Length: 107
Length: 415
Image 1 (cartoon, rainbow over the protein chains, first blue to last red):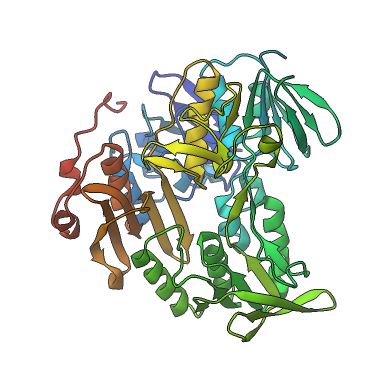
Image 2 (cartoon, rainbow over the protein chains, first blue to last red; image 1 turned 135 degrees about the vertical axis):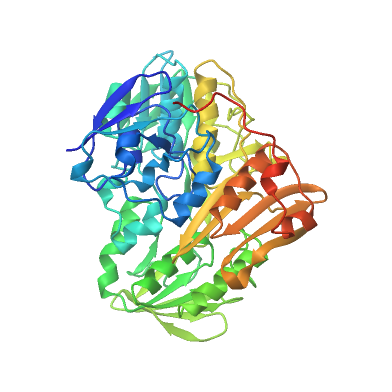
């Protein structure tokens, strides 16, 4: 199973394994990674699973669709070019080692 | 046992209050007693992706089993609670086991209402509340050709959209003169009705089911209040829910529109809390007492209750928000339109992307958005900060809503 690394604002790193086909948000919530609220459960409706994808991985992910792009305008922490919603990143085998940063707040 | 937290219920509010109590430092044992057999799971997909086969049951749990184990949360599943002894600080399960508590949370939810009409107990007449309900409904779908949905609220319309997408012949019966009477404003309801009708759904307003007719115990048709007969091999009922107050009432707790609580989600008994769909609470944003049925409400009220239980009294004051997905239409609502005096539309319904802003006198009280997630997110910030805009400003797409909101504060994002 692919490993996903979450880096907290304080620098703490949490590595979890995730099932292919689940989302980065689910990987975080299932493993109780702090700072991913995911209030809507992954329907792209709340923008509380905001993450920053590490530069090395950005180009390896499919680009956000229009809905995700609009939801990202409403994130609590600043939107950066590397901002994504974790619920919209579906985990594939070639994402092993995907590293994302957790923002300091979601609401 | 003097300190134990016992949670009755097993959905969003139950899972969140346990997590929030732990996060806030609650150290004593936590026991969650749920009548359902499954760990707390996400409900919104049940009326959408799950029925369409896009979301698997494996993806539904809110937290993995390991979360509860690692956090010392003892999950007692498949167990109904029969009574509460508040003087003795214990609950008794249906099987007769007594479980003591220091603090008790009632996250008991609500149950679907059923219309009191003949034939409602026929096979093929379903409700949608639990995962078991959804599995039951999903498994029947391949054999369904014609369906009647009783109730034009969110659940009924989401199910209708799934049924239509699967190629079924669908009729929706709504007793009122418009859809979404409890959940949304007339502009949104009109738009949603047009979307459904364009997909071939037969929506009948001011129409109720008078009786259901069957054959060999299975439903075959619905006879409506205007005397017509609609063939149906499936009937889904979505006419609202009744809060589960019986347990609380039997223990002497006040229940008006639900289980009465204060802004900390506490009942008159300071050791007993009620959260989620079952709680009749003073709404900070609503400025009145109310009951809310939403994931956001369950989670936010549970967060406040969890912190309060851990000794950090935290009032619940979140702005309500809600969403619904039907076909490719994303509906997002923030605030409450109850009591609104006027509204303004930003964008055009004809284009399928617009928001409706509602005011109560000068106060902006709600924004309903259709396929405009950025405006919904902006609206949440407007309402949370108590910012208002004028109807003319809201209707002017050139007016920058963001400019009205104070800049975000807080630490810069990580490098």
